[in-house]
Length: 438
Image (spheres, rainbow, N blue to C red):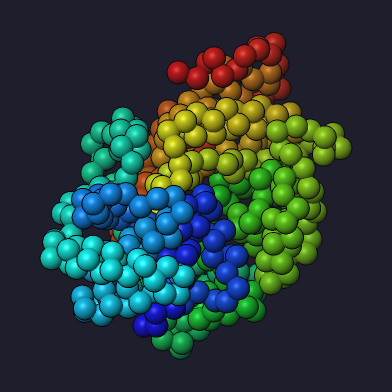
């Protein structure tokens, strides 16, 4: 492994913990492809960030200043190597020390050497949950009997689930291609779902460039199961980018009249690039804010998908930066936005139509409590449709998937679904909706 791998990992980690970028954003800014070993160091450093930080703080005589947070990131990367990677300690220490030169801070070599040598003599923290305390408390409140399992699951590497593009190839034929390429995989909950035994890079995935397959969590792939659409049905995906759920619906129901709405022009451009790769051209894109109706032509939709912005607490396995970047107050802010989106988009659903609300959150404040507030205040009387999936558990109004659900090759992220059908009767609208969230 080259010194450059440590330097790149430290710089990428610093962009997350020092400037607030997500790992996806930091990786997207990289000029060159990021080697798998570098990705592992970044993800692993974030996965065990809290315990590694505690050890390093105990080893330092005084905290590093703000201008030296790149050295702090390098120390985290070094400590991760010592505790979690199969690299001889002397090699991990020496190469990490040498990385100080490339970071333009040769003065830090002695400090990094001394601190990492001390860390190397210590054991890695045992049975640490490596979450911020507010998140541990909230998971405990929501899942008192499952809290330990959820926290431990969040520190595991996420499974790599695939969605076969059934417009292009059958799942069986694609699985044969994987076998021919020496890539073992197992069937998922749905016919088009496959879960690889070992994650690989996108570039090595058979048929990816040709549009035969997409990478998508197995839980998110349940959306078409909850959207029984007829040919020519009008569908709105209201927070569409990056497009995985929309494309899955187009693969399951290729004759629907679909519209993809997103507030970000750049994200819509990326969605369209993925559409070209997969061969999906028969849908409309709109740039607009789903929290208002400036973009709407008043022609109602048969089905509206609201995959709302959320804390992402159900996806920590694949986005460990969430534990570092999210704060307790973010959850209530997302809940306010989520309720606003449902209330607004409900107006675009035709009478007899359906709205599917979903998040990748574990927290009731973003899920059932948002739905409860909407049900109390809606101007159109919604009917809550019953959901039953082969994995997960029912909630008061919907269905919750957890990252701990049994059957290892079919694990899903944490995900929430609620289906609401618009009945014909109307009742007066009430003001101040957020006062109802308790």
